[in-house]
Image 1: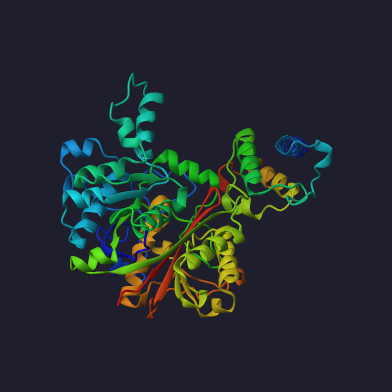
Image 2: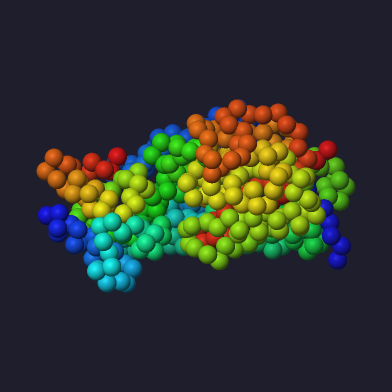
Length: 405
Length: 88
C-alpha cells in the first residue's frame, strides 16, 4: 500500500467571527475578537459573563422543521459547515466516491444543550416523559451520521471525543486513512455548542474561565473564554484533487498524538512536545521547517506556560524564529471544534501569507517567551505551519500543514 | 468564630488528603500538603457549600497557605462583609 499525499480542497466554518469561511478569515486576519457578553444564557448566577457565541444563527435559514427537530445546535453548526465545505470543494458524488469517502467528526460535549433542557423539564418541572428524539439529538456522533446521510457517504463514519483535542484527532485520522489508501476523501472537523446553563456552571466550578477576555500568553491572563461553532474540511488524495481539477487550498503533511499519562487537568510539557515531535516525524520534517504555530493557547495560566515550554523543548534554538499565535483570543475556545476552526485558520494563513495575531495581548510573560504576533496581523510567507490541540485528560494532537503552491 | 472556621477548614483539608488534622497548620502551604489544582477545586467547593458563600476565582488563585483561606472566609462572613462579595 503506497503512501499518498493528502490535500484540502474545501473548508466550511460557522463561528462567532462569522457564519462562513470568508467572514471567519476576514475578521481573523484583521485581529478582530468576537468575545463579548453571553446572550443565550442568563449569567446572573455565574462568575463570568463573556463568551464567543454564534450570534444571529437561525436554524430555519438552513433546515426545514423536520430536520430541525432531530438536530441539536452542535449538529446544526456541523452540517452548515459541511455544506459549505462540500460546495467549495466542488465535489460531485458518485456511488464509488460515496463508498470511498469517510466522515470523522469531533465533539467534546455532543448535544448537551438538548440534555440540559430535557433534564430541566424532567427534574424541575416534573415532566412525565422526554422527547423520543432526545437520544439521537444528544449522541456525539449525530453530526457524523447526519453528514453521512445527507451525502449518502458509506465509508468509515465515526466521531472522536477527546475533549479539546477532538477535532485534531478527527482530522488527523481522516488524513491517515486517505494517506494509507483506505479511502480517497473525507469530511473531517468538529462542532460544539457549549452555551447552556448547566455546562457553564460546570466550567465555572473548574475556575478556568476569565472574567474579562481571553489573553493568551499575556502575563495578566485570567483564563479561557468559551466559544461555539463548527468547521469541516474536505480532504482528498492529491491525485484525486488534481485529476478532477479541484482548487487545492493546502496540504496536510503530518499528524502526531500523545498522552501525558500524568494528570486530569494539569498539562505536562513533555506530553505536548511528544505530540509535536511525532507530527514532525510523520511529516518527515526537521523542526526548522516550521514557520508558524497556531497554538492551543487557551489563556489559562497552566496551558500557556506549558505550551511555551513544550515548544521550546521541541524546537530548541529555532523557537526564536517561530511565530506563534492563539486565535482563541478571537473565536474563543470551541472545545471539540477548536482544532477544526484552527485548522482552517492555519490553512488560510499559509494560503494568504498572513498570520492572524494573538488578540487582547497586554503584557509579556517570561514563562511564555515566544513571538506571539501580538495584536497586529503579520504578513509572512511560511511553507509549513503547525496547529496544536491539548485536552483535559492529558491528550495531545498536533497537525502539520503545508502551503500549496 | 475564627476558631470554628479554622477547625472546619483544617478538617476539610484533612478529610480531602486523608491525613490527620494535626498535620495541617495555618501556615501549611498547598505544596507541603501535597494539594494539586484539582484538590484546590474540591476544597473550595466543599467550603463554599459548608459556609454558603462564594470564593472568587481571583482569590482562589491567590491562596498559598491554609491561613489565607481562613482569612478570606472570615472576611466574607464578617458582618461588614458580604458572602457574595467575592463572587465578582
